[in-house]
Length: 431
Ligand SMILES: N[C@@H](CCSC[C@H]1O[C@@H](n2cnc3c(=O)[nH]cnc32)[C@H](O)[C@@H]1O)C(=O)O
Ligand SMILES: [Zn+2]
Image (cartoon, rainbow, N blue to C red; front, side, top):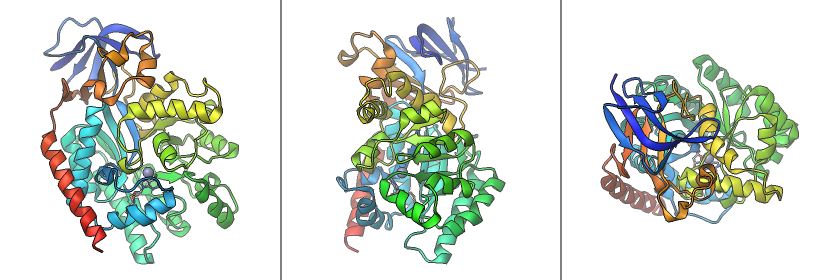
């Protein structure tokens, strides 16, 4: 066993207590071996003045949308997708997706994120980038039926399933997959009825957008005569390992249904505020026992991939929407970004304890905006930023060391991404 000792820091434990502890990691198995006083390790990562916490989990993302960051803002979802995003995405090449995903990975690693769920195009490229980056991911090829003829729509579903089957377990198991129909309104009932059973047979969960805006609830009710998540249940889309993004406009019956089925919800507060989609009923989900995770959504509706922002936004939006300062407390925000995300994605992490995967973020608390430290959990939710992360460890490997990304040439990634983004937009605008 070759070990890594994360030394002399304070550790955030699964019960949210904080003590001075070392963390010993087995680099071969990628697991945490011990949390406490550890005499020595083969290698040491200095965590003095830092808090060692579970690596953050970004449970809903479109990573390569970093290329569209700041390209089109200040519109509601439907117009934004149809007028701006989809025309540019129609021009995306495999190489664009690779480069945009690498940029996203640099950003994720820099801000302490060790796992993410991605739904996009050209997912083989995303998988290659994830393999290089050393993080974990739940990847799925997003299926959109609108604007496609029957054959093209069918081919999109087939591609989603083919990717899911081929890549599940890739990169030494760091990559897991999903079948990813985009949403209940952008994919036809007929094809969902046909392909959901194939996903079940393949043993992959389903990841989709649901109840994001009020505008997508009414058409489902009109067409199918039931609430969107009752319709999803009829289609077999509320499995125990499935997770849906947003869940903003869910009513009490849908919340109860999710709790009963064990389907997780990924709350994306920044995206929901930016597109003015509404505020998800996070306290009601949590009270009902629904697993709630956090996601940034794509960088074009956020506009960054920093989960520290998401924790703060989740807490702030939750309080504001409920007119109750206790509605989403700091600990709930941190829990959603760590254990909640790991549970939603089916990853054995999200808690710093022996036997779990060694997916960790080491946050430097020696900063003016983190002084004094009355309560470390409060700081994580309200005052810390992704740029306070000093080291990021995933599967026992150090992906960020003393603020330097070890797995990519960051300057080269940024330059390639800027070039590809400019060329992509130029192609789309000359159409
Ligand atoms: N293969 C599909 C691609 C779907 S990927 C997932 C899609 O989700 C879109 N997207 C990004 N953010 C959101 C959101 O907040 N709600 C709904 N869709 C989004 C994104 O632009 C992308 O088109 C196709 O042929 O169109
Ligand atoms: Zn999305």
